[in-house]
Image 1 (cartoon, rainbow, N blue to C red):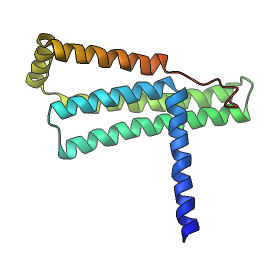
Image 2: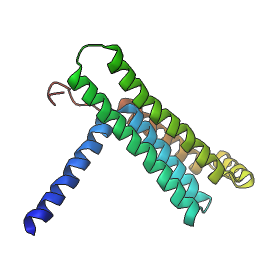
Image 3: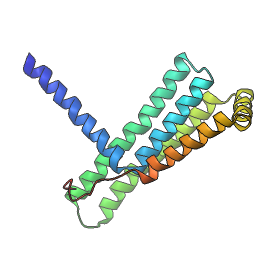
Image 4: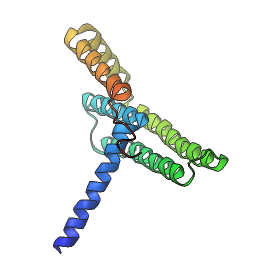
Length: 161
């Protein structure tokens, strides 16, 4: 029984390692994380709850999961075909295309669920007229840009990648 529990714990650890790899290595995964953070912050401001919030979480989870699958597919293609080959390109491009299609759908879902013109105009007005809110947004945007583009990456050779 304890061995099964330990094995389950290890499997979660492996999954977290995969997520960590994507955070460290995959710029697009970090872009999706930043987008998710802003969408969830907006949802909180708009008091989105219940099924609408569940749909947002499901959509965000789908984008992130598909990005993880895309990364796994790219790694597998690189493993079995280190040279450039047309079929390897097709595999990588279609996996990336799947993420793009789902991300575009997610943007549509987010727009439909969060579309509240009056509340959005109020938020815009409050942000532009409140120095604290404006500064908070600016700082969060700078942190987001650093996270996406300036996030420190380890040397691939040290990681044996």
